[in-house]
Image (tube, rainbow, N blue to C red; front, side, top):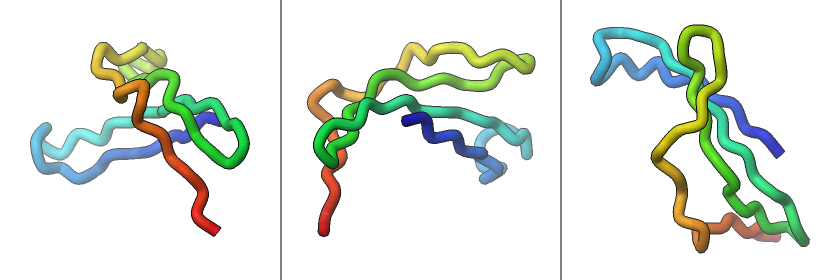
Length: 61
């Protein structure tokens, strides 16, 4: 699963809009983070900052 988001908060980068996406693996209603990417010069570049491997998202019913 890939989640793409737009950051237009304008708080730190003088109004520049940035895009990023996070890739997750889905297994039995749990999302496991794989890697993050940022859109730089119209190309997706893997981020050096990663989520902790033990950080998972569980579905709440």
